[in-house]
Length: 389
Image 1 (spheres, helix red, strand yellow):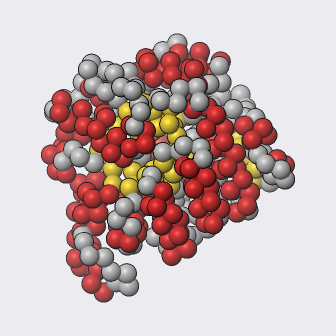
Image 2: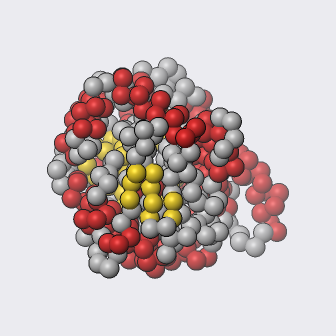
């Protein structure tokens, strides 16, 4: 707890060991285990990633952008000695629980770091992508066994392989205890989240009764990624990072709402993570306005305004220090907002993320309590059950 508030972190990250896939991949897929190369100009947490002949680490393989990440890591490590301790321990589960104690987090929903990154290439063979996701979920399940009431996880699925993604979502939830499925906001191989090919996946996840957490990744190796247009341009990492996450999430929500997915699947719960929440009021208004003008002639019809689907089925994560949160609450209320710390990533606020959130001006204690626990418990009910706090 923090200052009397129960805390559920909607999006806390694992930092997986390099050898995960060698240990957990099934035969005959071990030969596709990703390799990780570290250079002097790179942050130690930003290796070059290769899956056989495919290079994935767009941001870290370019020296001028790699140095930006190294400087950020240096400043993060200087804030608290636990960074060095966790790094030396390989970010194992005990060090994660220790970090949660420092922050005041009762329950954390774990989203992968490397697990997301190794899937971020359009040209991965579908069966290889699915094997990478399965191995990651098996590892994360074992990781959570250290503190199963406090460590919960969102399962990786490969959008390259829809039948494989459905099978893995079912296995991860029913056999491994996953409380959510990670959704990719970017198109993969030109396929958007509201395209008909993905419809069976949404049906399966709705049936499972877990949430989809849409989460961008720091890589820009997918052909359709907003940050790609800034690669190799001056200060491109600043511009790309600032724009990618909120914009990719905005477009993913637009696909789900205006594209009819939430109309067809009223039981599907969706979260939009690590992209701040300040964009939400304007984007809901903009989508509603566009629907009123262009919706009547569109091929796919929906019975509500896009904003209504958000309030019925969706949540957005605020950054712990998001100063415009009070204005967002004033515009759209506080029922559909959760908080995330992003530990142990260097652009997070550890060890003071929850402290900064609790100290935000212009947000009532009632709203803070809802955002820190109640809303997240509705988003991830399987995580709240049996949490013991």
